[in-house]
Length: 387
Image 1 (tube, one colour):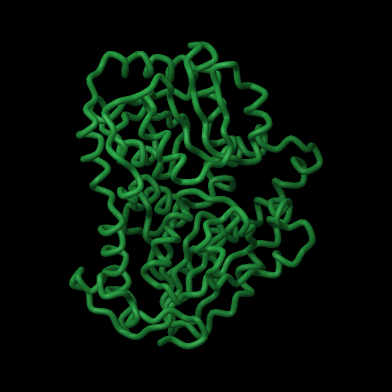
Image 2: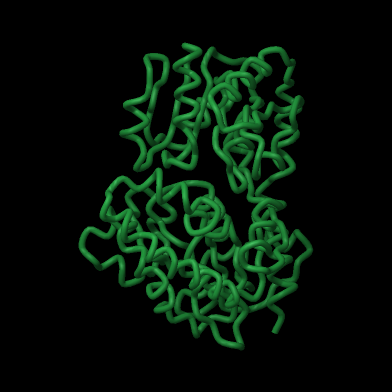
């Protein structure tokens, strides 16, 4: 048994030995950016917790009330940001402190550090005797490819909009410098591997995130509504879908929450229902009953389209980013190639003229199982973390 809450590879469940991967005693810690919203990264984190049940989880800030029970009960170790008053609600305003926050994590007792990162977690400090493996969801989008959109469109406070470019400039420099601290990168899609090469000048092996197929039942019947399951933040482009369905006067159900909810709610017409956060079982029920799933924004990978396909449902997706690796055009869904309402409406009409089989959708999702993900992660760590 590992000491002080560190993960011990030798304590892994017997089932993972069936992958044919040898394991050995080695102390491991997990570092995850934040634990204050639930999305695809948090589902990956839960898989890491399955593999390394004794590993402590270091994070900048959390609001565990919105996390599943198993994360609430985990060994969570926070940065000093957690102790700052109102940090749970206003953590984004403290972004300039985040590089310092992750550098304060003392990880000297561990042999392997596994960072789960789309922002700051990869910047932890390790020594020459440790191996740092980063599972990267994307380089920081708001300091790189989405920088100008973030500054000009997403930030409403004029004072903050004036100050933020100076802060993000410093963070951009830190982000590139801190990428050199990672020994080995894993990207969650080929699109992200390309961004890692572009911004960090590093190569990354691609291991696709997992879908828990057991949560979703195959359904070849549907009701007359379309579905979105997403965090409600601007780059997800939920506004595009709302405008399209307002114009079409078709029913759209949106599951999820986020700081953009109030604006989106004000846009929604009578056929658009916003349900807020819903438990997994409720979301799975809507997946099984929807006519099709809508992915209106560019995703780094995007687990939700695979969850829809696991339920036998076609996907209408913006044809960039990770969707190109998970949706088969004309077989399990359709793409629209311009980020406009007209382009999305054209794709909706195109789907109506196709015969998409539920079995084909499910078969595509089966290429992204949790078992395959866990086996690949263990094999990667075994290969790169030998003492």
